[in-house]
Every structure is written in C-alpha cells, then in structure tokens.
Image (cartoon, rainbow, N blue to C red; front, side, top):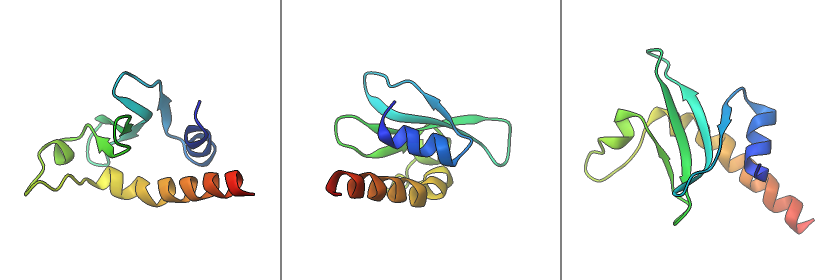
Length: 89
C-alpha cells in the first residue's frame, strides 16, 4: 500500500483497489445520484488523475473533469503535502 493510499484509507471510507499496469492509487467512489461505483486513480506514466465516470470520459473541449475528482482533489493535495513534509522532516 502506498503512503497516499494509507492516508486516504485512514481519512475516508473509500475502498482501495490494487494497482494495475496503467493505474496506481486506485479508489472506489460511489455516485451521489445512483448506485454506480466509479474508480478514481492516478496514471502511472504521467501522474495525472482520472475517473471512470461518464463525465470524465466524455471530456468537453479537451478538459477532463468530474465531480468525483473535484471532491477528492483537496484531500489528495493535503495527503501529498503531508507526505512531502514527512520526507523533508
């Protein structure tokens, strides 16, 4: 389990999924409007975050964005900042 996964696991009820060949830091997130479950993950090759929801997949004007990533982004940024501080200190 990565440090980011440990941080997320200790601060949320999101289920952590195992990495695969393309994605790391994979989490299940429930839809607010249905019983669907989406996967939010970080691409191994470039570190960008993605989501399996239709909003992210059907990007408009080349901008990939969704409410699941918007919800998680502050926590992801806080986790990454905390991990960097631990490495420095």
